[in-house]
View 1 (tube, helix red, strand yellow):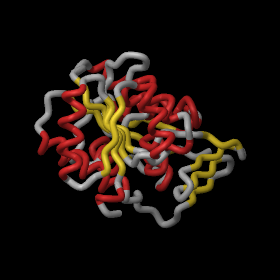
View 2: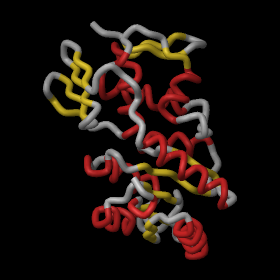
View 3: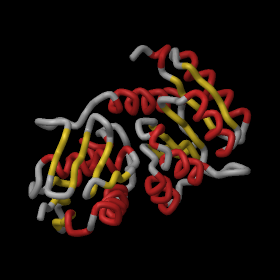
View 4: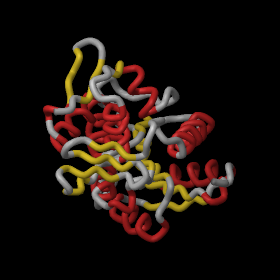
Length: 229
């Protein structure tokens, strides 16, 4: 996909931040739109269907976390990358963002060149599939369709945020294989993305709630594996 075809939505309640983001991203050749809060971000996202959303956390009308949750609840935005750009650096804010379905979390201030590098990395990885012998994985009561980004439990469709899906697909691609934490981070989040130590744990917990605790085993001090019945 050419840069001119990539649509980026920047969301922040500070006009100066939006101006800087739009200037730097437009200079790279991306199509850039803006919104001033979470509510208007959702309204605009429905219209333009962006490839990437860069969003603040603390905003009026609707904050970024709630907006992210609402976007992730709509299947239309399964493939949309959501990156938080915020002054909130607390661990609990990071966790809340990833639980809501964020792909990345960057703390302000950030240099424009670093931001552009982050954006390029996220967009590049979004075009890569996790390698597997097939685009569809089937077990007795679970079907994972890579092409459609769909998961079925006993024929019931389960909607997963992008990173939860990719983590599930990675683990399920080789049942009983123990994936080390650094390998999971590399395959799902990419080596260029710096995230908190608890990011994988948060996503595994959400998968256990949605897919079933029995399918995920923690190997203490090493990583995780997918268990079939």
